[in-house]
Length: 410
Image (cartoon, rainbow, N blue to C red):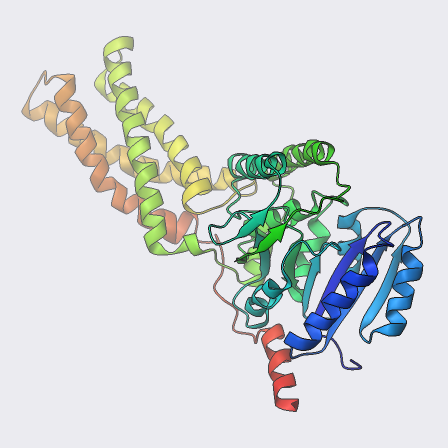
């Protein structure tokens, strides 16, 4: 255990004098039996007022590789942030002191990080293969909270609050400074920011049973979490977090950034904006009484603004206000080309069939839009949103390289 640890497992505690000793002994024995590399267990004491620090100090004398970090302020998020940022280990993890999660899931949790496959890993109690024992109240609150995260923040991870997570050390040093919450919302904030940065989150189904002695204020925690969700909504809307810069710096491209995914999303946005364009055109021409050309250019202008916004956010995954005006200006240049094509098609109809009904003109404009769509997609992908993210870096992966060096030494 004198070697530098590959894995640092943090156990945050507050007044756990009766539970800490048995849990750390069990965790240490599991790692000794199953983890083939040097490890460390860090007990992060959150200003306990009982004998927890004394119990932890005794554990550091009994077990090699166990260390104690004492914090003078409470807060699980504060403890994890401080210990993780100071740790030299290339893979960092944490788990609740009650060990509610079956330890057999620990190796599947950290292996994808050591191999370079993923950036973060979380245990999930909501997977179909998970086996969970807990009350109906906590089950309902957990599932409802994750639905809120999907609706409000666009989260794709399934279980934000399971106390069983891991992160690569190099990723932690980049992402953790952006995380503000020092308490229970820390997990959600970390995962949401990581997703916005294009980082890969690996999920592990876990066996989990509820601790009947848990002192977590479920209702109060849920209320604080909802405040945190609202704060993050405002931060993302205002572009206060440099997620795009981090994505490019780390060379992370999300799975949804391939050509196929872009085509599907672009097509869906295109159908919606085309229907908006045609509906506005028909309404302006028949209800408002504008001339065909005026109605077309007005409807197309409004539909183009909506189309650029939707493609920016949903097709290419760019959020925040940075660069939005430039993207809209470039979108308007594409609009000029589209307008020329649709107006030209409309002019041909009016020349060939003077007094053609609005229905016929609408169909012709629709066909012209289909032709213009191909050119619009190429322009958006290769020009307007070309800076949406980088490719995988050519530099060696630091975690993989460190593990390989240890394998060679062994």
